[in-house]
Length: 366
Image (cartoon, rainbow, N blue to C red; front, side):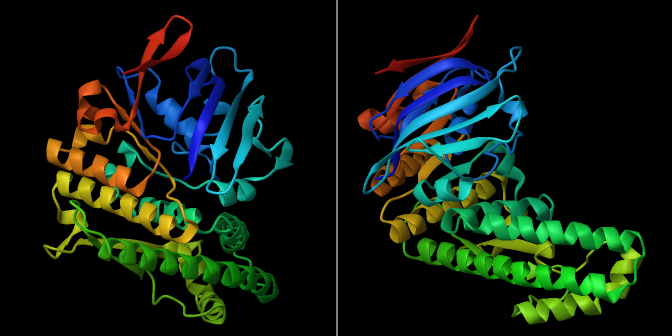
């Protein structure tokens, strides 16, 4: 299995200091709004690559008013061994990582720990701009391939430099050729990884019997066709230069990709479904992501579900809990009331989060 068995938070958000001792079961965090439940989920999300489930800067995560920096330490139980993992930030600087007392990086972190999540901010995924769906998909891709972050950062850096040339109306083809070659190589890697991830999600959904609706997924380009190779993308960028000069930005490439979802049983685009159906489709994708990872890695990822119980009826809540337990995943779930997790019975550890004068407090409840 993959689970955190110990978690210590120091000066992180509302938590001055908290120590959690865990046994691998799902974790239900309950308490009033603002008590610090989501802060714990954010801490867990930082044991995977990236900026965490809130996409916050390191400086934003530090406890106020001290603003001394923060530190997270955990014992991670992986399928074949355990790791001591630390991540921290001092003075608002970029966070650092240490694995088994050795300085490391976020790609190495992604190789030993997979974390997937669903948070209320994603509820508008199907009706918001394409950027949000790309970010959602890239997070899924990252769970399969930690090196995806490197390709994305390299592509975005080259694109920023190309956009600067376009805004300055620079017409020197030599400058563009260098950047477009970099964008083509990394952009094709990004597109190929996204296509592979969508295929894995589709397979995981098709192979499972679940109470949640299946979403048919399709990747489209908002400008032109999806390039079949790095050379195709390089040619598309070169051909688009004059149009890009007029627009002042790059109009072709994987940054123009969109993820389209359809409620399979009804044939209705996800954007036209009810709010409850849209939420259920998202839950289905997160569960599919977890199943696919379990099949590839031999263990499901850690799953973070913020306030998910409040948006599901009792039958779907029970189905969700059953699927999590059948997967064997350590799921961290939040809710305002302990009763929201009644269907879990003794299958979950119950932790009550309250707000005190010295910050958030965590207490074990039966």
